[in-house]
Length: 271
Image (cartoon, rainbow, N blue to C red; front, side):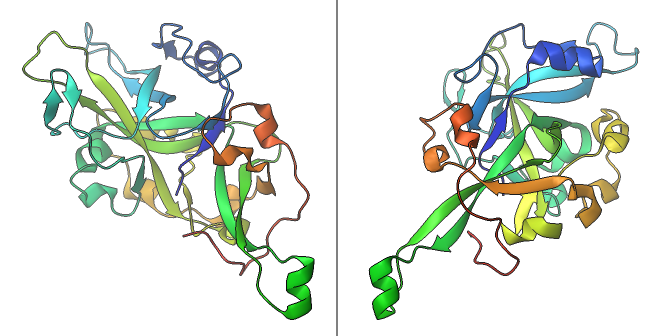
């Protein structure tokens, strides 16, 4: 799963790096420090990378575009709660990569609306037993604690996760602005990451971007499969501050190292 992550990506800089069009209009939606958000949670407006044709020139080649979307996909068929507002349903912030193509909420997006979600890394929680001095003396078990871990590239480079997106409109209001929303695809964890959780966001290597983002053709089935362990070999997991447990906290201190060692395979995983 992927229910919380961190990003320090400036959309303007990202557009330059990717030779993309920045469609965020410099809106400045971010965390506590510039464009950085160290505690991205579902329903937040997040950066995405898509490839689309220009509406005014549909025959031109598609171009990469940086867009903000609501994290939590709203299917196009969602009913209207009130003018311009969709009915609040299950927060679809994750989609299983192995089932998305046959799931009603995601199957259309799998065909023609795929995206990338840039991030510095993501958080996961590991359930670890907390044993005190008195507990050791009488053999009693201490209260279990959830230790947050941060998964990121060891070299600090940006990650790009596979995502799907949707456009929802209130059809009774032709002039209303469309609601763009997205979900992050997840897959079975592989390699050392299995020690933290049995699921992980699906990374999308740069070599597969053209096929993944192609707006005119479905993505090859193999891009939705569980990747080989080598694909995440550069990702390391380290324990971080429990401040991340609350979405009210947002700052670089959330990524501060804490005492503790990386978990070993076979330790209890958070379900």
